Image (cartoon, rainbow, N blue to C red; front, side, top):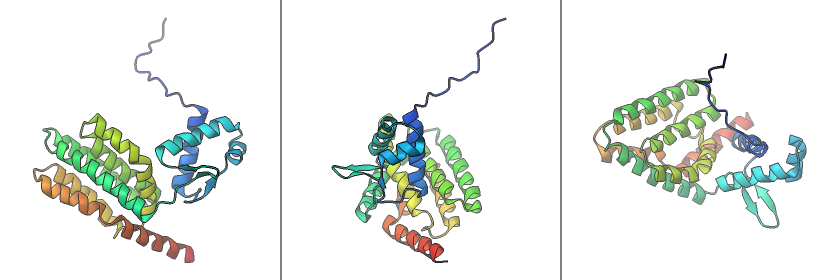
Length: 231
């Protein structure tokens, strides 16, 4: 009797360099590799128990994502985002997400999109209550990625993908600098509710207000972190 293969999904093929890239990515975003630190190819190869080839390939992948950067004759580093970098990343994000908001609000199925966004906001609320800020940052990013994907524009999504790694790095830097954890959840819920409505200018104003002043938020987040370290 022949086995029925219906319902069986093809498993994604993950290369060795892909798995190494995931490990390095997680280390960067968790702070295990601090901003400005240099990554040594030979040391990483020894740590992972592999040759230098897949490590080099993994690092090149993360350089393309913007999560690492290479300096000629010096090596590969975790980027130190300056105030100018932070402002520019959020400038680009607001342009992309603002276009997505306008596209969504012209659609008939935006109630379904509202439901999807609110579901993520509720998940954020539970995670905030647990105090897991790395997970909160991931969920925050998931909310904004869903917003852009819901616009149904391949090119807009592709543009967002180019700043996604840097955005994620920003999110992990900024967590702890918001006015309060409750405010973070409420802002996402308000934005979702406005997108479900008909007032496009109000939704765009809220998006801009939601992004706020990332430099001020970063300084507050750094102060919170320094206070925790001192304690």
